[in-house]
Each structure stands twice: as C-alpha cells, then as structure tokens.
Length: 224
Image (cartoon, rainbow, N blue to C red):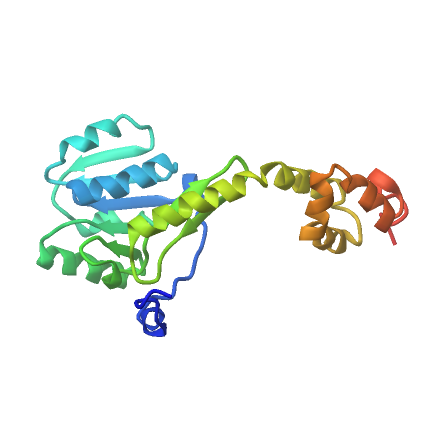
C-alpha cells in the first residue's frame, strides 16, 4: 500500500454538500477578466448559466465566448450593485483589498461565492462535471486536486455510458407505472444488480411479469 495513503490525509480533507443547479435559471457573476476568470466563465457559460463578467480588462480568451447569448461582458470596476441579481459570485481578482470587499458584500447579502485565489476561503467550489446522454455527475477530491478529479471523472463516465439504455428504460417504466400504488416497490426492484442482469439478457419484462402480475401494463397491481 502506498505510504501516503494514510488516515490523516482524509482528516485534512474538506466535506462537501452537493446540489444540482438548473442552469438556465442560475445567474452567475464573475469579477475578474483574467485567465482564472475565463476558466470559470467557460464552464458556467457552456453549462447554460446566465453569466455576467465584470472587469476593467479582459484577456483574449474571452473572445471565444463573448458572442454566446447567455454571456454578458461589462468593462467596469467592481460595484456592489453587480452582485444583487446574481445567485453565485466568482471572485477572480488578485487585489486582496477588493477581494475582501466583495466577500463582505456577499456575506451581507447571503450570496454564495468562490474565491479563485484559495478555494478554501470561499463558500463553494465547482466540481469536475461529466455527462452521458442521460446522466450527469460531479466529483471533487477532498484535498483539492483538480487533475485527479478529471482523471476519476473520465473513468466514471466510461462506466456510466454502459448504463444509458438501462436508465432510459427505467425512465420509461417509471412513466408507465406512475399511477400505480406499488410504483415505489417496483422501481426499488428494478434498481438492482439482479434486475440489471436480466435486462442485459433481454429478459427484464418477463421478470416483471413473473413478480408483478399483469404483464407489461401491471393490470392486477395497478390499483387498490
């Protein structure tokens, strides 16, 4: 076992509470037009968030996203008014005085903020995100290692892609039985390794008929 793989490493990590934001309903403000600001701007804009970036100057990288319909670039110094109508604030400035002022305003207005100079000084971080056709997920390492997160995310994506058709089937089944009194029991039965085994064998509907009378429509168990 590697010598650095000790219990103390986990003790130094950060605990995260994950939420999933609905992108087109989320307003994000980035303060700072340098490379750090662009990296976050690229992530949020491509996910479909409503993005505003405020900076006195913008690096050339911003040219690649300035035409996006959900992106607005404002050449200006920071002003407290900019954060009022935004849900998430990304602080990407190197000036410690301005950095502290922005945090003060965010705390007064109960805004969630990310500090690009030191992620531990903010209230949220952006996980490494990946998607298949029907699933999405984010991953962080507790000690803060973005490259490791990307490595793990890519490995997990390959696994999840294999389940896409099964997840689509589960969606379809859930809609078929949404009015059944035992729908939770059925979905619990379906969301298992045993049922997935029969799905891969194309015997899943026969298994449902066997355990839940009524076949494809579950007619017998569809009502009280």
